[in-house]
Image 1: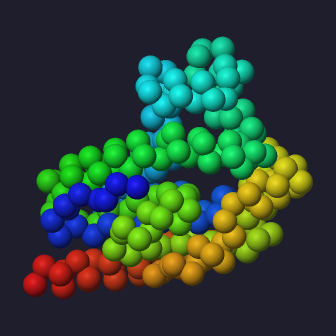
Image 2 (image 1 turned 60 degrees about the horizontal axis):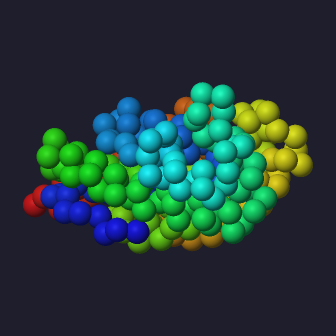
Image 3 (image 1 turned 180 degrees about the vertical axis):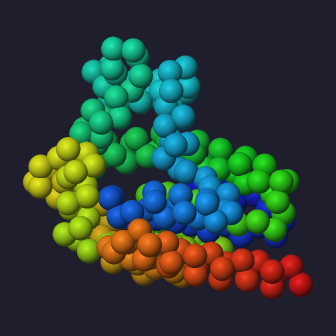
Length: 214
């Protein structure tokens, strides 16, 4: 990963968690509270649109069967392939991640111009796996009860229990992600309970930014 460029007094906070752990909801609440948000998944999606270099490399490696009728990469079809093929997943990450990190740096510089003392949340499912957690100021990990995670994942992606568990097992165990956490957010409860945790963390981050300004 490229080093994150100068960002004045902005605080860069990594946010990660397991699939269907409530991470996206946590990111949304941070943004509502006033943080800038960089969504690694959205960046990755933009990196693989037709006409991009990554699009060409992915087709060369995985073939044209992953395309939908409009010529877009069918992300579910591609996901079905790489989730059962670790070398394929590694290759996909090698194609996409460097480009995501480059765009991340561009956005950080843009946000720093707007608000030199703001807070940026970098929402990345693979924050730990890529080593990006080492290049942020603080790390937040969203997690939930395994049974809740399984139920959410099955409902969200219309998967069977077996399909969902297979995909969950391909990910780094949540215990490994929690090891690097400066803050933990348990999303097993209600939205109100989760929001209260996020608000407390955001207040603490703001306090640290103010201290850095002195």
